[in-house]
Each structure stands twice: as structure tokens, then as C-alpha cells.
Length: 584
Ligand SMILES: [Zn+2]
Image 1 (cartoon, rainbow, N blue to C red):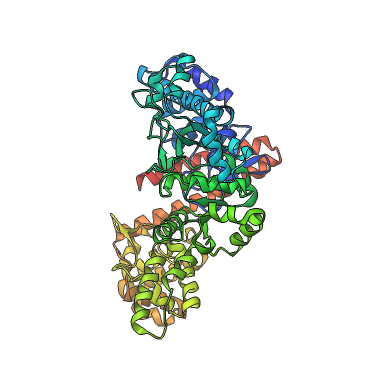
Image 2 (cartoon, rainbow, N blue to C red; image 1 turned 90 degrees about the vertical axis):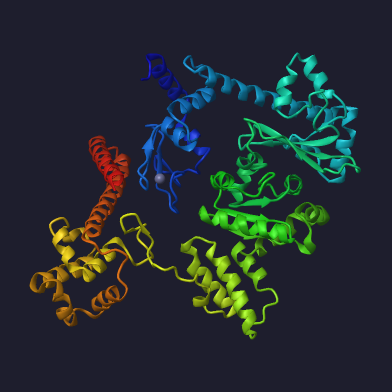
């Protein structure tokens, strides 16, 4: 039970944080009338059904029906509980919480101390780079790399001198060396972990330093780059390098440029490619895709031309596609990496980059080009191998894209799209548990269609559902067929359909014959009942969206009473839908 004190804490925090700001860090919101809309972060969708109401400080998703306030939002997005959400938001709002458990308080304090230490280190290294003779090797490296001071300062680049400089600095500031060791900045003997390296802060999208990567300035050093260890503040696969600097430019240009190396990104910003980011020390992860998707739907992938780089490009393309993002793959001439390419382009860098961007094909097509390199269509053997490769490539993408992709390949290679479709699985419809299809399979097989097929194969099931289904719960096309089949059943019983089928319209005959030839996976009466329930659910959802649309109209017109009534209705319906979904 929440205590009085914690209730106060919730109210106090709520008053101090703005839901819109919190949501905007995760969802790109667009203003429509007085509301803000975006793609729901809690379910997959292509068009925005996630609404934030700034006045009410509430949010609502018409797609998955999740809703709530700033606490529920943080709970869901950070996968924490109500306490955790309170704690995070309190930290942000600068509200002291009295009721933290000792462990929670300790964890929060640890993280805070770690972040403060990293910030201090970044400032120290930056100071050394620009204002100390010891920073000379770092400055020289930047000159070689053609990175100017302005760019370097934007990235807060620094230099870690040889020896124990940072330890001495901390001692002078009376700070604990232990924190620096935990942060991975210092060895036990106090020597600097990044000594004699150019230090590059890795920051989150809000510009907070979480870790460092560091490039050696010595010719004889084997390890060119070393990185901070993972800490409570830094989880590798969750950060996108330079997103804090690139996000505005990403929004402006409509796409992000994803590069492999952090230094590539720094050079890119130096040469005017301000929307460049890097996945930072790992192959692109799902968390990173979600993160960057807050800012754009399109990635331009710039990966090495070698085999490993191209494999990474393919993986990134598939992962992005699974999250509804488009990707294109840029190829740089002569196998150059972006850093080399931009530097060698000098004053023409912007222009040449533009040309590369414009010429970049979709990543899918880039993969196809690789797969068919050297392919001779008149060689039957080769044809089979290449078709196999392409089938595999197409099969990695979400189902909704595959038909279109097969068509693209057919046009490009002359290989029939049927050869490119994935070998059919045993059962055309995926079946879960009780025999219901996992979801409405394919484009045409809606729940209503499934029901009609089931009734064609097992007309006796009419007995179980006829009182439960009102024909107008079906859409127009299905309703006509349903009513006719029911009449036939009433006249002729289970065998009536076979006798009367000849009188049915041709396309209905076709539907029924096909159901007989290839029955749906489960035709039990029980399944028929479940389909009916599902139809009802779909209808309720449709009605719910209708109410929501009406609601925003009413809100626009400031019709207070109608708003209240519709809100109550929507809430009621949402509850009923939730109940129904849970019982299924
Ligand atoms: Zn949703």
C-alpha cells in the first residue's frame, strides 16, 4: 500500500515533469490540433495511433489500448514498476524521495556518482588536449585527421596523458579514486587506463557521458582502440554514438547515416555530414534500432566493403525492417571507409557525399546485387544456386515485404517470383493452442473468411454459433454468403450445401470448393465459437476507434459534455475489450 508520503511524492513529481517531454525522448510526436501523435512504442505499427494530451497529461494508444499518465508510460518503456518509475522521474525532477529502500537509494547514488565522475574525466581530458603541453600528441593526431577544434569540442574530444595525471587531478579536487576505478578510468595503481590516447566520450542521446573509447597516438601500440567496460551507467548495445549531436540534422534530412566507426562519424560531422551516427562498438542491436527510430524511419548504412562489413549491413537492414524502418546501403568508391573518403574529397566532400547518398539503393537491392554478381541466367545450375540465395535473402524480411521484393528480383534477374517464394510450410495457416490461426493469415483470410470456410466444411457448426452471431457483425461480402449458407443448412442440413452449391454465385462456389479441397486447420464447433468472439472483438475495436475519432472532434469543438460522455464510453469499451482479450 502506498503511504501518505509516497502519494505526495507521486503528486509532486507529476507536477514537475512534463509528459510530452518524457514521451518525446522515446517517440517522435507530431502536433495535430491540440494533441500530439506518434507511433506507439508498445506495439508495432506503421501509422500513428498513439496520442498524447498535453492538457490532461495523459496518453492513449488506439492500437493496443494501453493508456495512462507519465508514471505508466515510464513503467512500460523502462520495463520497471511503479516505484522504479517514480524514482526515475523524481531524479529527473529533482524531487528528494524519502521512502526509497536502502538498496534503491544506493543504486541511484552509485549511478549518480559514476556519471559525475565520467563528466569530470571528460572535462579533464578536454582541458589537457587544448590547454596543456601534454596534449600535444592528441592535437597532432587531430590535425592529421583534419578534425578542427570546433568539431572536436562538439564531441568533447580529449587527451589522456601518460602517467597518473587524472589521479593527481582527483586528489587535488579531493575526489575518491575508487569511483574512477569503478568507472573504468583508472587502474588500481592509479595509472590512467586511457594513457597516451585520444579520448572520445560516448554519450547518450541527451548528451550525458556514459563511457569512453580511446584511440592510441603511438605507432607501436597494437590495440588501436580501447573502450570503457560496461558499468551500471553504460550498456553497449543501448547507446548510439553521436545521436545527441546528430538528432536535429537527422530530423531535418529525414534520415540517419549509420557508420561503423566512431572516428568515421567525427570526420563526417567535420565535413558537413551532421546526421552521421555509429552503433558504437557492437553490431546494430534491437535497442539501438528502437532508439534511432524515435528520430527517423530511414537509415543510410555505410559499412565496409569487405565481407564482414557487408554481412553486418545485411543484418542491420533486416533488423531495421523488422522495426518498420527503411534502409539504403551506400557504397564508397575503391573500398574507402567514410573517414578516408571524406578527407580525400576535401572541398568537394559535401557534393560527393550528396551524390553517394542519392545513388544508394535500398539495402535489399544491394544484397541482391551481391547475390547475383557474375550470374549467368542461361546456366541452369547457377540459376538454382542463385535462386536459393535470393530466396533465403527475401525470406529474412518481414512477410509483408516479401511479395514486393520477389517482384523486384524477378524484374531484375528474370527468375520467376514463384521460385523466389519461400518453400511452403506444411500448414498454410499457423495454428496456436486451440487451433485458431495465430492471427488473420495472409491478406484475404480474415476472421470472417475463416469462419465461412469452417462452416463450408462443417455445416453442423451453425448450430453452435447461429444464436451467438448477428449477421451484421460480418462485413458486407461475408454477410451475404453467411446468410445464404445458413438458409441452405436450414433446408438441407449438413448435406444441403453439396446439393445447392450449383445455384450459388460463381465466386462463392469457388470459395466453398477451395475450402473443401484445402480445409482450414481446425473446423471444430468450438473454434467456430472462438471465431465469433474474435469477430465481436474486432467490431468493438472498430467502434472504439470511431469513438476516439469523434472524441477529438468534440475536443476541437470544446463540447465539454460530449467529450465527457465519449470519454466514458471509450473507457468502458476499452475495459470490455481488455477483458475479452484477457479471457481469450
Ligand atoms: Zn500501442
